[in-house]
Image (tube, rainbow, N blue to C red; front, side, top):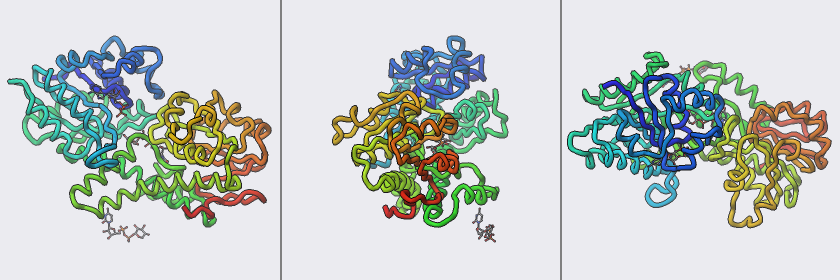
Length: 475
Ligand code: UDX
Ligand code: UDX
Ligand code: ADP
């Protein structure tokens, strides 16, 4: 069988961009992305796509209506497809067994049940969502327990490694594609079919094939390693602030060792995003279930260090502002979890903003891509009933900084590097503070303008009124 029709269940950050690129690179394959959420599909079919991702609009425009379709007719798409990607969300469980750690597989399970109910011909079912190790086995059990006579399924694991903000480039120039499947003739031929899809643009040597469990674990491991690098550099950033070392210099020196590598050594207010925390928690849970407490504790520490960094940064802001921010206006620049995305899932800005709100601050927030309603939803807290009065969203950085005491930069948007800081300074309440949580600004220049500047991983020369928050906080 050669794959002629692909269905993707889940039109989110993973399913949407991935299938758009598959459609672009495989013009003879019909790709249908389905979702149970009508609004989301309507957005995919409109000029305003539901997610902001550089380059995505162009790809969708080239393929939509030709070999790329977005639909809510899940049944038809499943029935017609040779290969089905499951790209639904897998949030961390918030109840019962594994609460707070295990992945909630209810959406994966419901997608599998739907396939079993509908399919009347053989299907290759591919798990794309990040799932716990051995999830493919559960999908297989559901499919086999419910299949129609004569219908055979092959289950593959094909985790997606794209990062938001660079998804299109990551997909087109993937470091590797990983496909895991059963070591049976059927499993191997299904792997081959999927390989042929990717071989339209990925060199064969970059397509790795493994057993299913290795593939599933590799995805969790890759995210755990990446997050571990950030937590390691963030842990060192605290030492830098308490000494005279500069974390940027340390990162360069360490990263030039090719065994370590220079990527992912950018100290920050903390990592965010939908994957890192969730996947590591998943790894911790698996380790606990396998009775490997030392392994669980090792990975848990990567998350704990990230929480520490967010708390340390927020506490530093408050401490510098004379230990009280009650009724002080503070600007938050950037709300997304990283630049070039409108996604706020697990964004460190949420942590910082909530801490400041808890202390009574009034927040002026600007982000180039995050919707106002999303910010309000993220900051909704039971004990802050008058949120609308405490949080104001602005359409640009200049209006957001006017008459505020301090700027807290939480996302590394390029435009924040190009702002007219003289103008901003002249319109702020004095003394005016900048807390650079991403280390992207020119601190010397800002100090010359008159700002009191603090950043991550570097003790800036103290002025009479500023105190080094890094060496003070004992959180
Ligand atoms: C190390 C650093 O590599 C070197 O840069 C520094 O200057 C001194 O410390 P060394 O201890 O001589 O060098 O050897 P290294 O190759 O780093 O190995 C250290 C230990 O780690 C060895 O026991 C080695 O077997 C083990 N190791 C290394 C692994 O178990 N797995 C690996 O992938 C690499
Ligand atoms: C991550 C993985 O990179 C990707 O391979 C996987 O498929 C999904 O999870 P994503 O979460 O989209 O992708 O973005 P990523 O670039 O990894 O950034 C995650 C967080 O780490 C962001 O908050 C980012 O600002 C932060 N980060 C990243 C740092 O603080 N320092 C760094 O050096 C790199
Ligand atoms: P990710 O970042 O993993 O892509 P998203 O939350 O962005 O996660 O997207 C997952 C999508 O999957 C959502 O749009 C959700 O509506 C959709 N979804 C979840 N379960 C099902 C299902 N059983 N059938 C169809 N779509 C589903």
